[in-house]
Image (tube, rainbow, N blue to C red; front, side):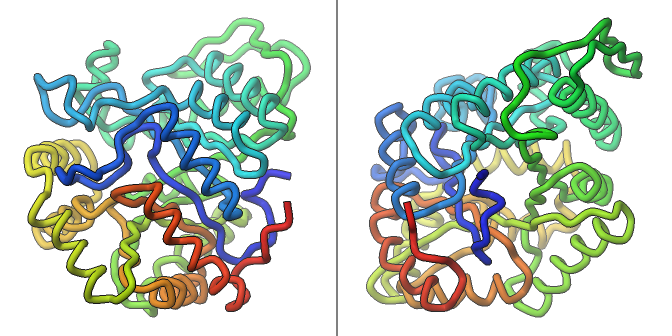
Length: 370
C-alpha cells in the first residue's frame, strides 16, 4: 500500500534532498546534494517510519548569471525517485514536475515506470510553473497566473487518461493534441498514483481541491485556532464543491536541541546571521512578481524569514517534547501530514528519532512495523 494512505493520524516526509534542501543559509554544515547523501537520509527517514520523500524540480537557480549557485544544483526528480525507491522499503517517493517542462506522455510513462519499480510507492507532485527564467530556457514563456492552471489541468488530464484507459484515444485540447494516445505498462496503482499539489492562490486552491489527493499549504498563522480554520476551509471546499476528501499537509523547518534556548539560538545563527541574502533577494523578487502568494509587505517579510529558515513553512523549534507537542497541536487542528526540512538532514533525522516515540505515545502514529 502507498504509505500516504496509511492509518497514521499525522504523516511525515522529508523535503528537497535531491537539492540543497530548503534553508537559505551559508553555514558550512548545510546539506548539499549527492547520491550518497540522498540515499543515507532517505534510508534514515524510512527506518523511522516516515511516509514520504519529495523531490522538487529545479532547472535553473534563483540568481541570474550564477548557474553553479546551490539553488540551481538539483538532481532530476524522476530518476532520483527511481533510485531512492530501490534504496528504501516503505516510504512513498514523490517526483515534482512543472507542466511546461515535460510532455504529459513522457510524464505518464516515467511515472508508471517508477510506480512499478517501487511496488506502488509513487506519487506525482504537479506544478504549473513559476520561475520565469527557468521556463524561458525551455522556450515556454511564463503564462498569466490563472492560465497556468488551465494548462496544468489539461496536462494532468492527458496523463491520467494514459494511466487508466486500455484503448488508444484522441485528445484535442487547447494546449495538447494527442493522436491515438496510449501508454503501457500502466502504473500498479489504479486508477493512478496519488496527485500532490500546493495551491496558494484562490485558483490554485480550487485546482488542488478538484484534482489533488494531497494538498500542501503554507500556514498563514502560528495560532492553532486560525490554523484549524484555514485547514477546515480547504477540506470543506473539496467536499462541498467537488465531492472529494483530501489530505492537507504543510512544510516545516525543524530545529531540535537539548533546550529551547539552544534551538532558538541556532535558528538565529543560520537563518539570520548567516542567511543567503542574495538567494533570498532573488527568490522574493521572482515569487513576488510571478505568483500571488504575497498579499502585503508584512506577508512578504514573514515569508522571507520562513524561507531563510527553510521551506517557507512553519517552524518546529525546541526540544523533542516541544516538537512533539507542536505536531500534536497541528494534528488536532486538522493537519494530515508535514514535510520536514533541516539545515543538516542527517543530524536532524538522528535527533528526530527522539521525537518518534513521543508521537506514538500521543496516538499520532503507530510504531514502525516493518
